[in-house]
Amino acid sequence: MKKYVVAVFLVISGMNMMINAYAGDEDVVARIGKKKFTLADFNRWMSYSSEENRKALEGDPKKREMLLRQIVTSMVIADQAKKTGFDARKDIKENMKLLTDNFLTLEYLDMEVARKAKVEEEEINRYYEENKSKFEMPEKIKARHILIQVKKTASEQEQKEAKAKLEKVLQRVRGGEDFATLATEFSEDPGSKKAGGDLGFFSRGMMAPEFEKAAFSLKPGEVSEIVQTNFGFHLIRLEERKEPVVQPISAVREQLTKALTIEKKKKTVDEYVAKAAKGADVEFYLDDFFATAAPDPHRNMK
Image 1: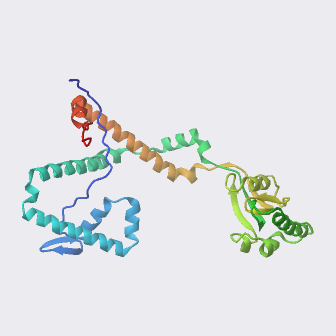
Image 2: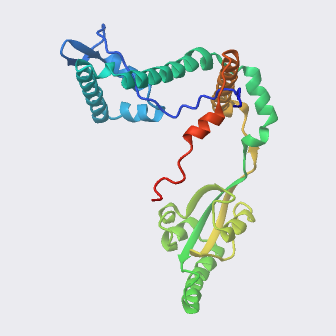
Image 3: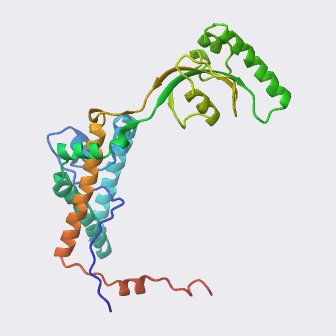
């Protein structure tokens, strides 16, 4: 039998919430017999939920009430189980120990290990300087368009009529009429029509290839020739162009700090776990484990 000495990786995908309800100076929000459940107890439950769930609960009184009722109901059933001696069963005690160890591990690694991992200003500055390309804002343009809708699969006559309609609009643009006013009158794009065809700023890869190619080739104030896409025929007027620019560190410092802190905490926890496992002389007997865990290939074949 071979022995394998390996590092321990604690992969914890989830756990049951636990709480010891006790009376305090805080407001009592529920009572079970003489046992009081306070707002502090409720908030303790909340603290074990994800940030997303906490925000959802904080913004919805009905959901908070539902959770409170669920917690109290769980406590009532737990009390009933204890009265019958169910918690004294060997299998239940063993499972409760596993949950307790799991909970203790999570809290210890979070409070005593991960929270000590701090990201220094020097680390933030160094990462920013070494990865400036990641913080580059791409070239953007602001444009207006006038759309006459017609599918590319439409008949030749339908496409011809749609294009002819837009050619008349183009002649009026070239005659000096206001592009935005004409867009409001003639464009068939419901999303931009009322705004004079204004599409706002966009970067490459956000529009249809034919539209993008024509729009990015224009200079501010220029109007394109008629451009066909899967949506129909377009006239495009370039309003403004923003060249690529690297965001200053002040603009990305907060997101950098969060990302580097998460990374450093993970590394700190991984190193601590590996060192703890090595110091505890952990061994796994994987031959026996796989031999006993392997399914019977003949089962269910009768």
